[in-house]
Length: 453
Image (cartoon, rainbow, N blue to C red; front, top):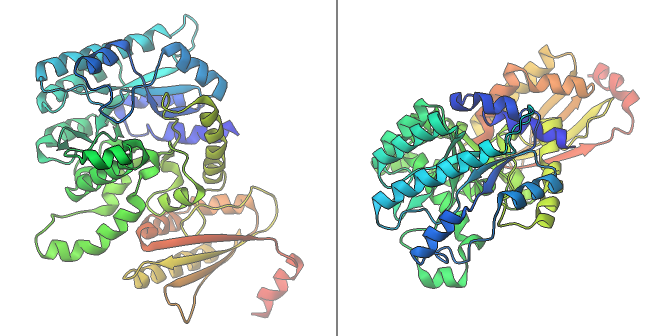
């Protein structure tokens, strides 16, 4: 089953020029894209400024040895280490710049120290911490970390004491990271400003981290950041937080907001294309299905959130992730653009897809569904039927009958240009999706049914 993770581990790094070598190392490995390192020097710096409880809970104990032991027991081959919250800026930019340099060099040395004399790579890679809010210092540190220290990317906090990602002051940094085709790992930090009473009643990790992630990514999309700087490969944490709810709302309100000059131009599809999503945080089946209304299975990545999560929880989550990712990897997307739950098997594949289309999207969705159904049946010998139907009393409710000759025919269908065009073009149109897999009770009658018509 672990083999099923390999595709996602490698795919994240495709197109990231600084990470091509890293991609080749990850093609046959289970890679953790959400893992934290907490060096003693960082812990001491945070304590010096009285910020050990700034996020509402203490920094957990961490060591490279304990981390590797966890990886060995959980079956994780490689982890990309990032610094947790809080960000090492406490009002003194000179101190922050020096601290980031020291921490990045420590992690670089840790990676190097784990490289054996045999051709066995370190179980660790790292994404560099940048000394924001100083943008030029951040660019200089990113260049040094990528070119000299061997970082595979950079980690960015959602905000640095009120300087939120998406702020125009950060555009030069975004341009640099795009030009370098950098891997960018986002992580939520304490919002600024913050309501202390609310945070004491509901700790950050329980809810606000999800709000903070959503707030920041939506802010970046509102400024068209990912579309304007498309070279970046951006990892959004915790299964996309509330983005599956927020993005459709943004889309629906965008025309009137744009008309009234309240927002600039937003290319939603181009923005979403740059985003990948780690599945740290024990997402449910429903959460993953919701996430797949925004993205595709090849943009899902594995994450542990270690050392904030115990080994037994990680092991349980791996089994959950196997379910999510094995479905995505083994079966890809069905003709209606969602995760398929069909198990690989020889023989006839039959299913019914139940789709709810967003208001305002019905006409283009019907056209796209008609086009993919017609082209698939006309041009693909193994596609017996893709037959979209509209419920008369509920026009936004669509049923699609899908019948494939066998698993091979189904996999070939997923690679066709007309299916890929349909998949990418309708992701934002689908409000909900339910796949009903069936066992044909009289498959021998199939030829007669179609002959009669």
